Image 1: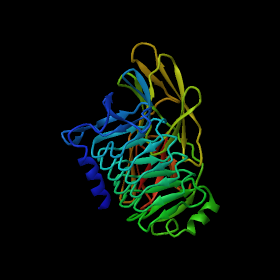
Image 2: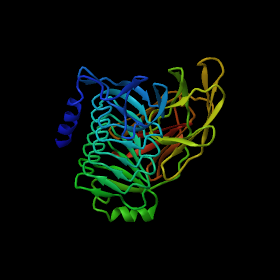
Image 3: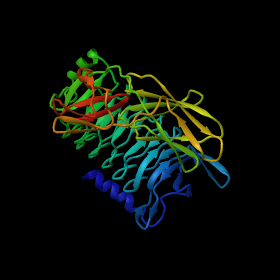
Image 4: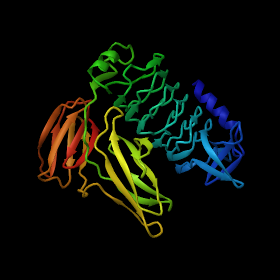
Length: 387
């Protein structure tokens, strides 16, 4: 309970006003120590953190005629708020403790590429479903994702060295972790994975499996089942729609991670969020989206954003859209509904073992071993599901 007390003290001290120095675009900012940079801060109104909905944080913000780079997220900045999605710009190099703690509506976060650590209790008690930690992060703090009961998939970078106590404690729906580190990250405590069972742990190769098996925490077979990473080639469909006139909202989904490159082939994000937001420019712009496990990159897809008249934008999809089947699992059985007649249906486990493959009818029932994650492909549609 120590971290809850710390967070409440931080919030109480800010009651009655913003925590910051100025407001721009509905976001409160504070000057950092050198007064040439700013941090996103709490937005306290009548004792409540008033952030709500989707926030695409800019890399620079203008105040009194001066542009300031946004380089940090302050302690408790979005804590206890009703924020739902956040994209953090690559100008941010530091996130402070409790930054999103107990923002219970938060489901999606895209982290910046220059981040070095995930601080203590950063996402405690949120509803994040999938998270990819960017390459370069070395440390994950105490209770970083504690009690994230909706968390399903985590992707960890090769740079990760240390994971502190309670980092994933209480994440009872965490079914799979991809870890690109060839040496098992050191776990600083006995409760790093408290309460977890039957988690599929995917690592680089068979040699890496041996390294993880020898580790007390990672080699606990009650917690993890180890698999070597496999190549994968998903077929994707990207839907787009205008958002706030300045952005194109792209639906990603499928519980995968994605590398997103801009029109200059510069990497702008690695994300496993359900949505990403591309700027609506005044010219055609081609973006490249690459599904990834951080250990293997699949074939790229090109998304073209065209803006010619106002906010009229469209997504040029990589292939024709097929009707999306409904795929659900219940007590060891996968049910598939929809217009799937004469489409190939295939089911693999996370080790790449093929369990089922045949041409489908319009409805299917597939019985499988329970407590595992499977990849289901129906025609061109791919979905990852826990049975």
